[in-house]
Image (cartoon, rainbow, N blue to C red; front, side, top):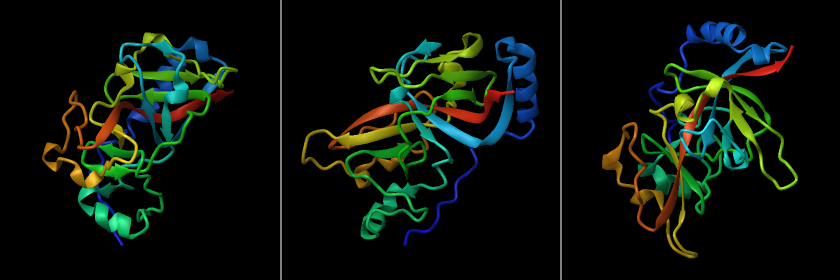
Length: 217
């Protein structure tokens, strides 16, 4: 069995920030006057798209982690132990060899759920901007519209230190294995793409921190 992973809390939003978020939402966003901010556990969104975009119609390609996947991850160096355990991580999630996720410290993560549930998420990058991300229900074509309040962009609410990418085999039957990950690149610095891995194609995602929801008052 692989030992549980201990990880520095790089993804946490300080408690002192939450009252400020609640105040700023009520004071600065009159659009949401009929809703209220409800604090929840810190959650994460894996987002795609132009980092300068404020709206879009592709939230069905975004994933959602209801709990922080980092501390639940498995080091790439422990990959063989993971396989020996039937691909089941110590935290109970199942490794998927045809589409596996990696974060900025070199930890294999559980996959987020798709699509992103509709709702109004209070999101931040842990820097200067907090905004309301509105995600609409899936339409007849399977698309989900989204928008960020007050002109915020995806970049504004991206947590730059958090990185995530999904890796898949380059071709059918080809090996795409985490134990081929070049570990010397970790931890990844903001602004650098996740590493290329032999036999794999990858998709980088932006990571948004969710600190609560806006719900009907």
